[in-house]
Length: 127
Ligand SMILES: [Zn+2]
Image (cartoon, rainbow, N blue to C red):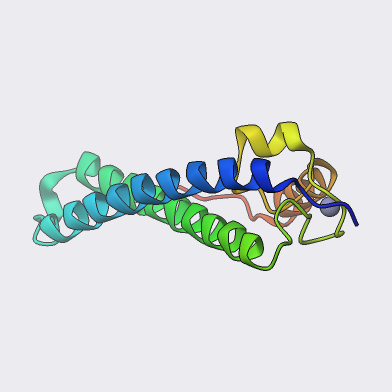
C-alpha cells in the first residue's frame, strides 16, 4: 500500500497541531460559557435555552473534531497517515489538503453520511 510522502505528512502534521490548539481553545471557551450559565433562571426565556443547546451541539462537534485530529496524529506515528480507516485505501491527497484530519476516503465518508442520515431519528422540538 502506497502511503503519503514524508514531506506531505510533516506539512499535514503542522496543520493538525495548529488545528488542535485552535479547537482546544475553542472548547475551553465554550465549556467556561456553559459553566457560567448554570444558574440561569428557568423563566428567562427560550433564547437562553437555545444558546445552551447551540453551545452543547458545538462542543460535541469540536470534541469529535479533536478526536479525528488525535486519530490522524496517531496514524502518522504508525506511518499509516492518509489511509482510510474503513476500507484501507489511500485517502485522496486533495481531500487531506482541505481536511488534514480526514480518517475516511471520499467514498466511505459518503457512505457513512448516507447511513447516519437514514438512522437519525426526526428531531422533535416542542418548546
Ligand atoms: Zn474508504
